[in-house]
Image (cartoon, rainbow, N blue to C red; front, side, top):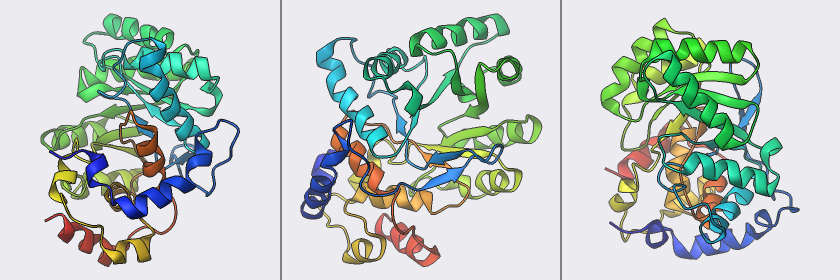
Amino acid sequence: MPSRRQILHVGASLAALAALTPWFPSASPAPRSLLKRPIPGSGEMLPVIGLGTSRTHDVALNDAALEPLREVLRALTNGGASLLDTAPSYGRAEAVCGALAAQSGLRRKLFLASKVSSTGRAAGQRQVEASFAALKTDTIDLMQVHNLQDTSTQLGLLRDLKAQGRVRYIGVTHYLDSAHERLFDVLRQEPVDFVQLNYSIGERNAERELLPYCMDKGIAVLINRPFQRAALFDRVRGRSLPDWAAVELGVTSWAQLMLKFILANPAVTAVIPATSNPRYMADNLQAGQGNMPDAAQRQRIIELFA
């Protein structure tokens, strides 16, 4: 399977990434405005591109391992974004995120999201308290029941934490199409602020029921697996980005086209691709700017990946 570096539309991407250089120094402002969408339950505006940490942030807590991830976080915040999504089940990722935010002085700029994946209230409470400690924060912006594990029990815990002001929003997550029916059942039975699920050009099952339901009921939607763990790059191996995509949508990489396809769905609040490469972070942020595909353009994008 080719790497994303091999798949990027090289000529156009290099020019775009050169323009993104100001995102890396901490004092530099974002060169263009990143689209934000409201969290339906509160109206708080959330930038549409965030950062996932599964696999990419499970590294040693030493300077050599943390430095590229520190640059990713700087690219995120200097690009106008804030959402950082992690979980205790991602190995050392949660502690890495806490260390990076503290060392860089970026906590106030971040919308921190984590998860609980325990059975039983006592176990859930212990895990959540460990997340507060790992993230080095007194308040977590979003806590989610991970992969629908002991959902009712853990949502009860999260509601209590929200009432105490320790958690600002609560939600549920999953990452597989096969779980969408269960996820839909939970959303109809349990009041939540957010749902996190998989959706991409190659995994469009959420379009059938979940996304319309969330749009109708005012549930914020976070999208994981936007590249299907790089499988979508394999579909366009050796192919140049079509000229119409650059002209009509302003994209300069296949990754941006994939992300814009997702963001074109109005039910989507934000998408959280994972990366440990600051250049990929900067490239992803480009997808949150400019025009989004209309229905005809979305169909053309689907055909490109067929």
